Amino acid sequence: MNYLQPERLDRLAREYVLGTLSGRARRRFERVLAASPAASMAVGTWQERFSVLAASVPPMQPREAAWHGLEQRLFPAPRQQPGGLGAWLGRLLSARSLGGALAGVLLCLAVLRLQPGLAGLEPTSEALPQSYVGLLSDAAGRPAVLASSLRHGHQLTVKLLQPVVVPADRVAQLWALPRDGSAPFPVGTVPDHGSATLSLPDSSEKLFFNVTRLAVTLEVAPAMAGASPGGPFVLIGPCVKLW
Amino acid sequence: MSPPAVPADLSALLARIALRERAAFEPLYRATCAHLLGVAFRILNDRDRAEEVLQEAFMNVWHNAGSYRPDVATPMTWLINIVRNKAIDTLRSGKTERASTVALDDEAMAVAGDAALEPQRLLDDGLTKARIDGCMATLNPSQRQALALAYYRGMVHTDIAVALNAPVGTAKAWVRRGLDRLKDCLQAAGVGA
View (spheres, each protein chain N blue to C red):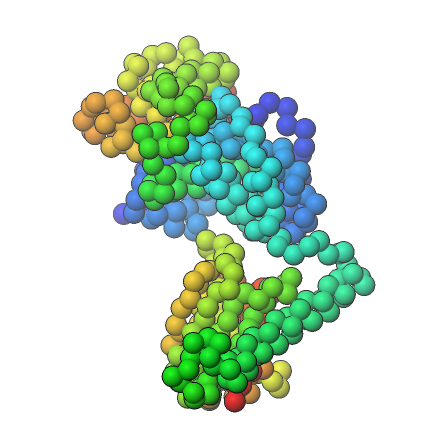
């Protein structure tokens, strides 16, 4: 079906903007829209036409909590001074708080090893299995993703400690950063909340033996083997051997 | 542009936001949030949900301001579209029940009280403001009502058919006729050509 035939495009565009295009047809048209300037123009023209109707909607002042909630969701950290010394201090602080958070996790694990009764783990007096553990934090130093994998396992479990903002047209791509500074390699994609299990192409031991850090970028599509990050690291943190 | 006399230069604010300038974000929010919440509230009929949609829309604005195209739409039109799309998605994902089950606070009462009439009145006001009410008067009441329910309530053809007690095919034809006429009247008036 040719979406771009002008009359058909105009009919789809107006029903899309109005909202009467629904379900799968709506999603299909959104994909056309992302790729076609002609479709964007047709939609823009109808948006302008409908703005005549929007003009009569009575305004409604949002509660102040809506703004605070928005600010909190977008910029969770306290304001940092931009540029120069301020930015450098900001980075230092976030590295420190990140280290602190990791120390916290390791402390918990150490305590559980020594005092399993605290967490009701009496029956298993065994130590925690040998694993790779990563803790990724956001720019403000808040822990965001916990990644763990058995040393000889072929799966990596990721748990989101706070939701990650992933725009609709992006995926959160997890990368492993080797100790020697060689190129990061893609591990898998991370959900924006909850947890997930990623299948690894090889054993953790082979993949992560020389990896000291994990990081997340926002990519337009999941990265293939051999790809490199297409944007800045929005989350990053140490990857350690738990043995 | 939809709200009269917006003092801030919304295009400039959007351009600065695209460059990740936080100082530009709050002025954009303050200048547009009341109108945008009004749009979301008409569709969702639930203040909490509407404010949630408003927040999500502005998160989208922060992350995607770079995709705003001044040659395609005015800033307010672009923003309204983001909010309407999110409100419509929320409505259809079943996260919001409509008037019958919504908590009946004052605002919900005000909307539920004349649920059928209000979209019609908004449509009339909008057409009068744009001075195309005379031209649009050639539509019959059902055609106008169908257009109003779709735009202000985010209803799909099947909802409109139920609301106006008509077959779905008829509801579709009413909406199409309303859209054709809207385009013709605006072109004749030299608005939104």
